[in-house]
Length: 138
Image (cartoon, rainbow, N blue to C red; front, side):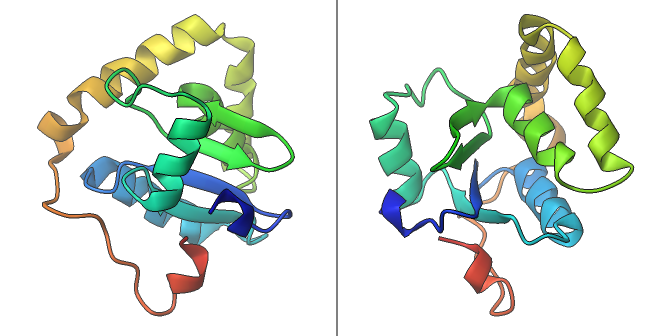
């Protein structure tokens, strides 16, 4: 299943039932002018394949994952900043936060991730892409 990702694309795996995550994915889609990203819920088959391949414990990882055939897997704040870096000005300026040590960035990321359902809510099922966006989802 992972092989189905085109080599020139990066795959963003996200929590398909999280309202914050779904809003973030919609934001990335809107600003992905280079058409670099594809998307899949963590709960999907390809999401599960990557979780298993990289031996990620889903109970301990509450995170966005960014996967590419070329660069492997990134998670948490590193994944989010790598995505922002490709979204054009001024969003690409977020990459300045790479100077902040990873443990500090991930502490902030984990705090938001831990509270995201309480603050933003949760869907009953994963988002279903519209026909126009279906080609961006695996």
